[in-house]
Length: 441
Image 1 (cartoon, rainbow, N blue to C red):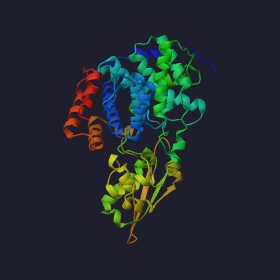
Image 2 (image 1 turned 45 degrees about the horizontal axis):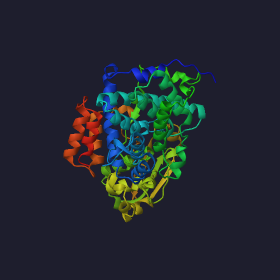
Image 3 (image 1 turned 45 degrees about the vertical axis):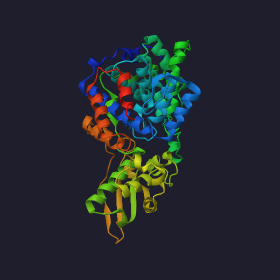
Image 4 (image 1 turned 180 degrees about the vertical axis):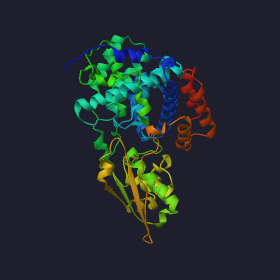
């Protein structure tokens, strides 16, 4: 392979200013951050977050950096690690169809910890968010091409974390070039598809990507040297051709439900069909979901853990059929034992539709067929997940989602307070912003 260092990416990471960004990108940055704060807040209720807090205490130690959803403060590495555990804990964060991963969650723990530590402004944090998204998504495409394998969020996020934290730390372009090399070369090669069938906290590898990216920054500061990254290779540098002109973060999708994206169209097709035909879950004899192959590979077991509930297709669909939603209240031990949900799970089957499968991963489609107890058969139209890029998700949509997913844990008044800050207070320091969010948790 031939590599050439031209500092194109490094200059973009270090020199991009808020005022230079198109208005639609500025708006998208706010949308993304509102969504990520929601993910961090609900994620702070998870067992995975408790594990991250314990790790932060035992390995990285106390410090002055606050963590969303915790009363304790840690060192930069500890705070980054803790939030790396919570941000993807409930699989409610943004995604990008082409890299089949969750860019935002993969770096938010690191850059939010660094932003708090250095007390930068919210505007500067949003600008850093933009460069981290662009770095993560473009590096993700290069890594997938190089390995010819669909790695997952933690793999790409190591580089996005390094880019964002390096910017906040005031790296030179030579230091930035070095940290990108160190993070990419040592990134965890997460085989995410395995967690589809065998769900666990492993899933997208986000905590480990955040830790590697943050560690790459500290290693660079201590003198560790790398040499070249994949986006400098002749084979992959074309992924930077439209840098500064096209923003990949405009191609993100946003998730309404706390489960794998592949289950979302199945949930919506069933709920809409039931509403339109006035079907109760008690009326259902059988449900067949026609979808793409990868979706049918999701686990179908009765879950015992939060992760088994999220990386599942039968449980989220059945729970939504019974309760009308799939959120924090459906990922509890009590919900896992709900006899009505278990009964509906036994009535579900999943089949591959070859024409639908051909359109994956660019499109994730399904249709539902419901047979009632009186043998009436109803078939939905084809559904895609809500929140896709072509919907041009804005502040109103994401604010409604924020209110819905955080309702079980924070008051409406505090939701209003947080959303007002995130929409309007560009000059506020990140330190004040995070402390304000945590004040009533």
